[in-house]
Length: 101
Image 1 (cartoon, helix red, strand yellow):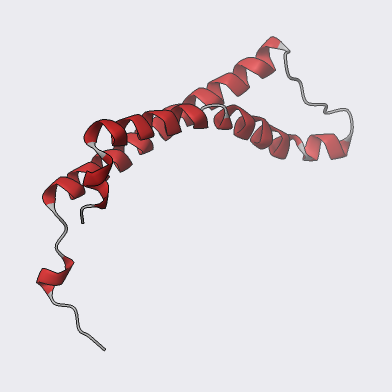
Image 2: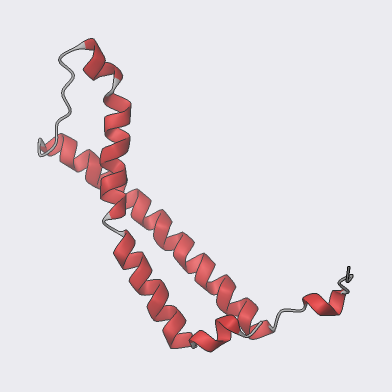
């Protein structure tokens, strides 16, 4: 079994910057998408475009899961945009930088 030394685990500076920038950018876009999905869910409910039924006790008990699913659907609408921006960033930096560890 080969023991790793500190110099075996060195990541090149450009690759580290590229990966860090990508993770921070995608994280910020995901946060923005989550906030916009919450706003869209609220607007859908307030405008009457989507109104969950609360006629029975079971419907009332399932209100939170229904809100969660509606939020998830609104959130997933932003996923293609996040993916497109992340791929464009990786392409503009150069895909080879991410694999040059």
